[in-house]
Image 1 (cartoon, rainbow, N blue to C red):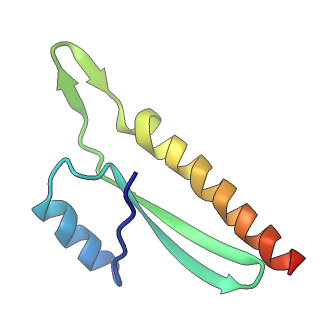
Image 2: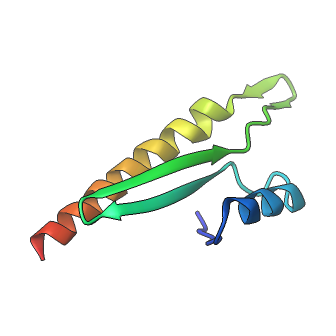
Length: 83
């Protein structure tokens, strides 16, 4: 997986429109304080059907990405509390 950084949600929108089918989703992180990090998940929710195989973006990308984001936020906060 490759990570890209954008300054604004509009930059993400522009990139997703220019580069269709390049990224299933984007995460927008906001660090509220040392122990609270929030995020929003922006998905490319266009479903794909290939030769009778339907790919549901919610189950294929959104849920795994949400789980990974929450796991890494927790690790980051725990690491910060230990130092």
